Image 1 (cartoon, helix red, strand yellow):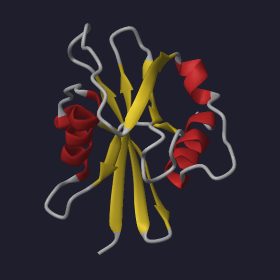
Image 2: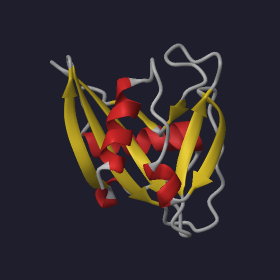
Image 3: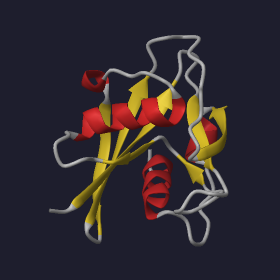
Image 4: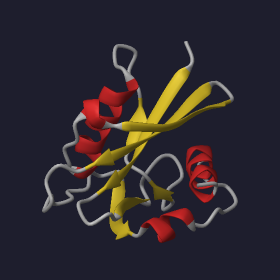
Length: 134
């Protein structure tokens, strides 16, 4: 079975998007820009998996039934899926897990102009390519 990785662009009530920064101890792509999400477990659907991962990585709650699928793209043996998630709580506080050391809320314009850099996570590159085409 092919692996599925589902991530999300989390948007707050002010229209800003959450960008995470991986910790220097992260086993994959340490200190890189990231979005909340991760692997879909065999018994999960992608929407439930990304909602679970958002909760685990940021402490934020989103309704999996209200996620908007932006794209699905095959990369080698992995399907990359990107969703948009809108926060229900306007004052929700971010509580990062060990995987990330920092975060920022950025404008849609900043989101669309995130840098692409050599050696980036292919998932991140797919997301930036998608955003810059919008």
